[in-house]
Image (cartoon, rainbow, N blue to C red):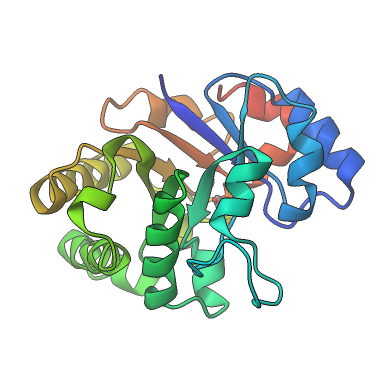
Length: 238
Ligand code: PGA
């Protein structure tokens, strides 16, 4: 079954609006990632979809003196099944490779599914596919650098390929490019870590193009931003 993740980002404004949205997108195979403030409220109102978080602390503590942080164990206890890590919008606001590696390790240790987000900026894309692959390989190797092989469970580790230039731009990668990158990432992870990982695509997914990605056997699902705020359109992707 293909996986669809609805990343609400910093939307919508209120808990009641979040609940309304989540109820309209409550399908099996879907994970809903509302703002952390609304996780508990959304959880109580969904039955089929899984609850997802947009971020997690890199601290290994379950509780402690970390102002503003939410631990992986807290997320797990509230019913979160899956967490996004290393989204490009967090990387540009200062999240480091070291923090991402810490988050991957901590979230996996807490038993959460991890969706590691990777993707190249336009300047790398313009250099061609081998530059893209080199860039993605560095992101993956760095993100797993704190986790030993036995701490990277196949069933809990997913990768989302999200080219930065495609996010929110209305200009998605072609399904062929997304598929080629998925094949590359899957074989890289299999070779380096002996894991078979699900690879998702994200970046300007629309009701019109979703199926063209999902029809590729190499693409295991979608990470959807903007469209997840439009339930009627979102439904067409599920
Ligand atoms: P988008 O965002 O679907 O609005 O392009 C995707 C994402 O950032 O996860």
